[in-house]
Image 1: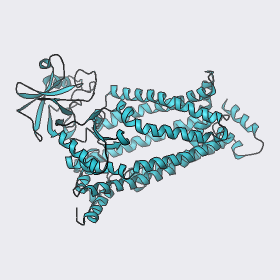
Image 2 (image 1 turned 120 degrees about the vertical axis):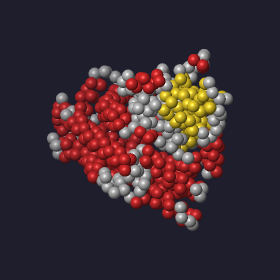
Image 3 (image 1 turned 135 degrees about the vertical axis):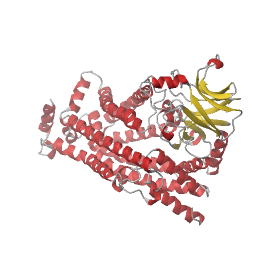
Length: 566
């Protein structure tokens, strides 16, 4: 059937063209494969640099054991990435050249829907196939690779729930948008591309406002940073410990006099770890399950010997309960994410002044002209121990977001310097500039789509006849050789913006240069990043400059701006 379609298209031609030849699909496929081959080359070059001498600027970030772990992690990620790319390439080009696209189209036509609905189903089916192919790779990456190096905190339930939410959201938002796009392209002739551009651009702008308010909270718990004190437990993996994930890197906020409670939904429905509180029992501070009926009878998961009132800076050591330690001894650690995975029998915690941090962050935001923002803590520790911070939204929708993994990692000054960097992106109009650039690029892309929509050469490359919804899919594929160099230019611009945001933070306060440098080192050390990336890999893929270049630029700008050495 593949070749019947293909020969029918050839018979329609009135003159001998290149696309009429039997080799035409393979020629197009070879061109489309060029960016992937270049990416593979960059990955191999990156792999060749693993173990290279660490730049002098970065000396001391890792000790010998940490450096070996970082190298192992980098090598494991490289191996995973290479195999993932190669297998995906084989599947994609095999699907293409063996007639997969017309086969899916034939299946959709048997549903006897309208042309627009057929197109929506066709595109959603292709997207679903891609997701199904990626699921085994995602599982391995999360539960094997990231788990091996101590980063994963995602449970199977959270993993499944996130993907179900993403799929449902994709259908709810994507299906109507696809239907409108296909209607425009089917009804408005040669000028349809302009209507599609206006429509999609409007949707993108609306989503910029809705993302922090409606969409992100579906996947991440966003907890307003309150006034008062908070107690933060240490993270699993520190000092060789393997803490229960439900106690690792968790934030307890002051709920009432003498009570600190969690506010995230980590492991909802579990017998332990769902809602926790830190209270005094018989004079000692304990971590127990929250209960509204009989607080005194709530199960105690850990107990400290600390008595008296907690003040900022106080450190507590909690001994894990015998029940939890027994679960680990009985071999249930591998099946239950809420029990220890190693020999740890205690967890330490520190009391911090969350209200003071909140006031300092809002003061800095107002000082820099970032008005009306609210501060939220994201429960990133429910999925990973990687840290991050970002500013999102516009106007009254502005949000300053800190991952809870950031709080035990950095000092207040370092968090302020990181926030100065993130605010710099907004105040220097990086988000606005990138939005304008992406819309301009999308305009060019839609203009090109308008010229390829009825192209028999495009359809012939995929063994089909010209159809609107098929042309949309095929165009996005053949556009990759154009999109690839544009993505490289975008990465270059992004790295330039990172340098600018660093300088903005340095200029905000005389101490921020040192604080920002220390914060970057801590984040890189914790994430076990590769300190010797290959320049070509950075050029193609990295949205942020290498750490040594950033630290040198921060130090140089501090010296120039304040006329002193940092």
